[in-house]
Image (cartoon, rainbow, N blue to C red; front, side, top):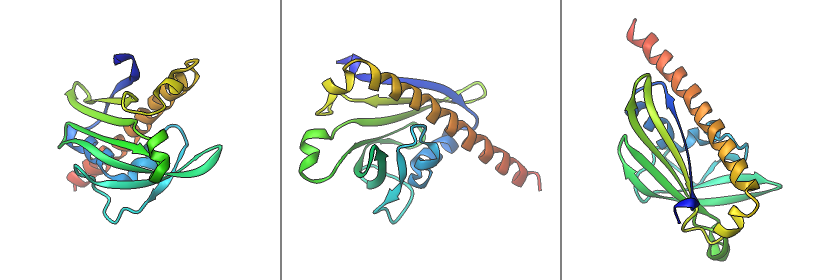
Length: 165
């Protein structure tokens, strides 16, 4: 089942805790998303995620829909993952994929590893058919890490400017 986990990685500027904080803040998810599918969050009074938290996202792929996500892994500054899918009865048929981010110190910043884990997803076999969706997801994940790097670089520049005053 290892072939049901797609992983991309890159070095992102900034310390692991700072980069982790960007991903753990649900209000940043739309800015990070490289697929263009995320249309904003809903049903989330606070922005910082923790283990067991749930949050909703407005989505668009051919049509508008929403997802319900639950944080299923959380190791402060090192790893965060949420399991996603629609709420209600539809969740029994199309829910289950896990989005995971791991953070390690690296030369030049933080090695960020993003994984799309479809092992628990009810549609995993469909998602692997023809490799089209798999390849699109890989491309979008690379874009997401590029966008995360841009956000982190802006944050590093802002904190650097603040430190020098």
